[in-house]
Length: 431
Ligand code: ADP
Image (cartoon, rainbow, N blue to C red; front, side, top):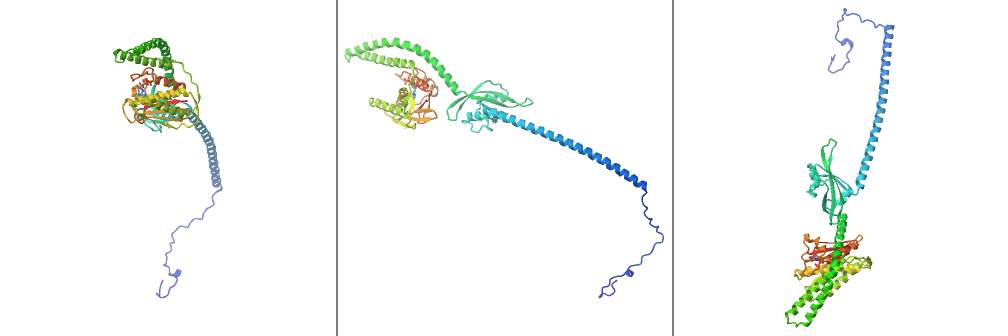
């Protein structure tokens, strides 16, 4: 109790309030020690429980070990399956990448999902990155797309541009792609480049046709030549003997001219049907073109009335000699240049141009003859190489046919397309 606000005193027990004592509360019993029987029973229970528990733990441990073993076995099997799957996938990829045919798969929307290396190469001129591309955009009329609509299809062809920009023919076949439940999930196309095969087929057919034609033509030419020589001889005598103001003199002159044209045709025909052989000797490719231009210029010099055409040579083929039949190649080049000049002159234009370019490409030698004449209409491009096709009054129609044969004998080709300078471009490839 704080009696004096100025001094602090620690309270003593006598300061606590006085608690009343309660004389009726029962006395707290003294704790008794457990009986022995009870202790033994408790110990027995404890032993039994721990025994049961440890038996259960043992069983659990066994189950655990068994489950672990099963898990390891399952894992092992799984990784074996994955490895087998990997091996199969790698093998399938290897097969896909090794086949020479192009293989392309599309989904139901026409999007390319798979494309092997051969297909990538064949299509690279048209679809640089095929996987993910829309097949409809590249080949809108492809039977592969019709297959997605349930329309069955047989073999068909794609006419495409190759990597070098040249036309190529792909022979193709398509099949539907069915899922495990038999539902249509896309279509697959297998194709191969048959351009060379077609070219060879055409060459063989052409050679066959020409052989038959040649045999017939050679016989006819000999029959015609003899009487023609007689007609020309007699008509020339008339020209000589008749006065020049006599009408018959003019008629006889016409006969002589006509017979000479016929003779030219017969000579060309005989030359065309003559079996040819290639005799290769080292020649500098550019020199052949140069001497051909010189000959053409010399020819022009004696025809002062003709419209002048500018002749240019671009020689990129170097100075190394190549084994070629120079005589026959010069004949081809001369023919192509003459044709080009005549085509330009036919238009009557005064700024006529003929450009020869010589270059090498891999194992090929390429001569390109460009002109700025009227060009060759697309529907005539095949026919101009067949014998006797001519659009000229005095043409034989044999020049290009002969040139084609000589190119083929050189393991090459002769083709025509549009020239960048406006007219025709003839491309002579030789090996
Ligand atoms: P020819 O010159 O006797 O007519 P060719 O076989 O050499 O025979 O030519 C066949 C035809 O090809 C020609 O008549 C002509 O119609 C066409 N031709 C050839 N070269 C050209 C060219 N540079 N431009 C346009 N047409 C051409």
